[in-house]
Image (cartoon, rainbow, N blue to C red; front, side, top):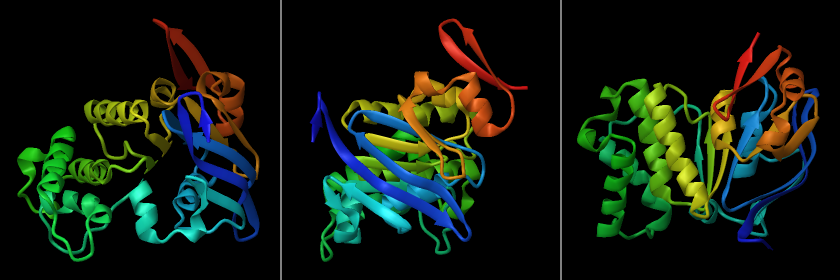
Length: 260
């Protein structure tokens, strides 16, 4: 389905997301397209990660359908999904030793045949992914020697290397210093401008205001709001969402948010 120069990649139809004895998201209907950076906001426990995992197909909704490129995600196998969609989880647990390069190379696996070896192009893409996150000089290090921030950037390199049309990010700025927060989000913003769809759970209102063009507010009681960032990110909406007073300040043409 086309809308202007965009193509719808994900459609959610009457989606319910529940935990025992509680409905977190009720009747979520939405369509997400290329050239979008969508932020999911809400308090802890409001269903942000569960929504992201449901979109990724690793958790079934209590009701409703997730469609990817027009196909019901339940009709796709994991390899098909991995070719179309990549997921950055909040934390990564690596038990086995590996080098930084080999770990980043995992992002290419959905595109490599079961009995094939990685190609020259796969290796070049892996190096470029590590360069983007400032880890190419550490490519031969054991991943267990990395700091939390470096490990986070390595996970992001895997996602970039996967080169899927749809990129799902669960709190992508976890463990990152301010410089790398902006650098990583600039990378994903550029990808969204280049016909990718980015959907990210995020907490930093100022980063959301800067990078996201649409927002999905989850209130944790089934209620939700979806709309353009500039329309939804009002003092009234954010105060209701977070249950704390949020003040919006305009500074040099940019909106800044503080809790008080």
